Image (tube, rainbow, N blue to C red; front, side, top):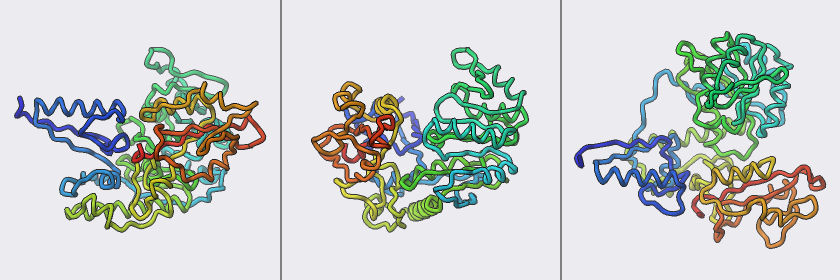
Length: 430
C-alpha cells in the first residue's frame, strides 16, 4: 500500500489566512487547520502523497510561502469565461445614494442585478422596501446571512416558494404583509432557478457581507440560466484590493458569455481593481518563465502603487513590499456591529484562539448609560466613532489577544448610538 499514490488538492489553498505553517501542528492554529495537518501526516504513513494548493490570490502565495515559481502553474481558463477584462466599469460618486436611474437602465437588460451599497442588515430591508415602491413589478430580495426578505407580485413564484421545506422538513417560506421570508436553508441558486421557472427575467439582489464569498449568482436551471451581469458597489475608501476584486468577481464566470457585464462603483475602486490586476499579471508573467521566487517578490519586484490601500485583509500580513507598513504602525482590519452580542458572536466563531472580554468584563467599564473603552492607554473613556477612526498605529506587539473589542458612539452625547468595533490582530504579530 505504501507505493500507492494519492493527490490532495487544497481548494482555497492560500491557507495562510488561517496559519502559514502547513506542515507542523501548533497550539496557535485553528482546529480545522490542525486537522488538515493531522490528515496529511496519516496519509504519508501509508501512501505517497502529493499536495496541490489552488488559490486565486497569487500575492499571498509568494508573499508568505518560501516557494519557487517552478512549482507554480496556471490552470486553463474556459474560453467562455468572462472575467475582469470583460467588465464595463461605470464610475459613480461615493455620495450618490439614489440608484433609480441606473436600475431603470439595467432592468431593461434583464439578468440578476446585485446591489451592494449598504453595510448594515437593517439598511438592506429599508432599501428593499424603497425599491419595491419604485419597481413594483420587479422581484427584489435581500441576501445577507439571515432569512431572505422578498418582494414579488408573481403569484406563481409565491406558490412555488410556499411549497418549499427547510432542513427540518418544515415550511421554508412565510408571509408577512406584502413580503415573503425564505429560510436561508434554500440555496441561492435554487431560489433563482424557481424564479426563472416562474417566468422572472430580472432580479435585484440586495446584500453586502456574503457578496464577496465564493458563491455563483446564477440560477440552477440547465438552459440559459439567469445570471448576475450587473453590480452596483459602494465600499468606502478603505477596503483592500482582494476584497473588492472578490466582490466584483460575482458578475464574472462562464454563464451567459454573450451578455455584457457592468459594474457601477467609485473611480477609486475601478482604478484599484485594474492596478491590482496588472500587478498580478506581472507576477504570473514572470512565474511562467520560472524566474520568480519569494525572495525576489519580497525584495526586488516592482509593483504599481495601490494608492495606500492594502492588498488583502491586514490580518493576513500580505502587502506589496513598497507599501508594507512597519511592525508597530500597522493599519488593522476593523469590523463594526450594531450590538454587543453580534460582535461577541463574530469573535467566538471567526477569530483564532479568541480569549478576552465577555459581556461581564465589558460591564465593568460602564459609567451610567455609556460604555467606556481602553484602546491604547491605561484609563477608560467614552469614545466617539470619529475618535477611534483617527487611531491607526495600533501597538500589537506584546499583546496576547488576537483582537480588540471596543464600544464607541456615533453621537457622543447619545448612548443609543453605540456601535461595537472588532479590531483584528495582523497574522504576523500572533
